[in-house]
Image 1 (spheres, rainbow, N blue to C red):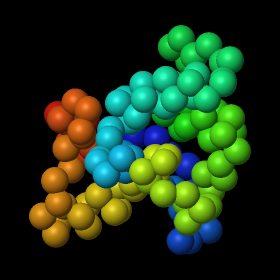
Image 2: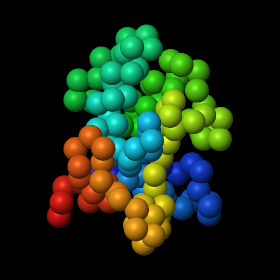
Image 3: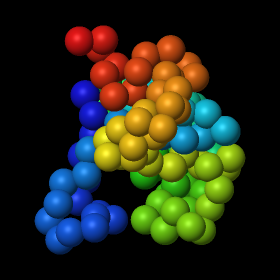
Length: 116
């Protein structure tokens, strides 16, 4: 399921649907970036045990906190160093321009990861 958050919106209170992430010159779905972020957070020194708790946004926040990165300011980091959000609006625009929206990890279309 796509994550949602209320920061970085064009209109006050508008809900942004996160459908994926750009990282290391590729597009990633929420499940695949979750697993990558868990591993990277642990490598960076996080002692949090995730189990089945939390989602991609939670794990990304933990990883960012451990390395001292401000996720809210995406201009302060490169997607080669840390994942950047891909919204549903951006994904739809990119698709209309012919972009491949398949996840590098599992191959799903990030707009519809369950293939429904």
